[in-house]
Amino acid sequence: MALESHIRELTDKHSKLDALIQRETKSPSVDDTQLKAMKLQKLRLKQELEGLRNKLN
Image (cartoon, rainbow, N blue to C red):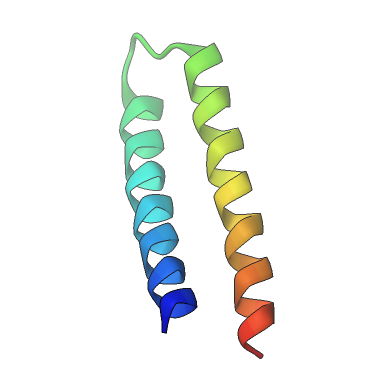
């Protein structure tokens, strides 16, 4: 189904973004503004995923 495929794509994006955030957090020259933007994007992805998963149920 298209919805399930979209959920997998978003889950993959969410995981990659999480890994990037983890790397950036450990970096001594972390850009707080960029880190905050990535965390916000990750949250939006999570919210979208939850909404889509609710539609499946």
